[in-house]
Image (cartoon, rainbow, N blue to C red; front, top):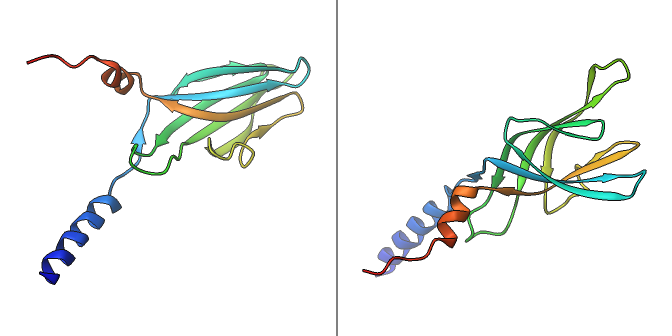
Length: 134
C-alpha cells in the first residue's frame, strides 16, 4: 500500500514538473508618455513590431503558466529607439515580467514601456464558447 502511494505521488510530481509554459501569440504592453502623462495599452503579435512614440517594440516570445499554477507572465522583448538621422539604436533586449513591471521595464527619457500580459485569442474563444447540448 505504501509503495502504491509513493508511485502515485511520483507520477503526479513528474507530470507537474513537466507542465511547460504556454506560448501566446500576442504580448500586451503599457506605455507612458512622460511629456503628456498619457498611459497607452497596446498589443503586439509575437515577432511583429509596433511603434510607441520614438520606440519600436518587438516581442520575440510571450509565455504564461497553466491556470493550475501560480501566475507568471514573461516575454522576451527587443526595443529600439528612433535616432534623429532616421536610424535605430537598440536600447533594450531581455525578459520582462508582468508580475514585476519595475524589474525590467524600459526606462527612456520620454517613454516607459512594460509588459502587462499575454493573449491567445484562440484559447479565449474556447473559454467563452457555449457548451453544446447532447
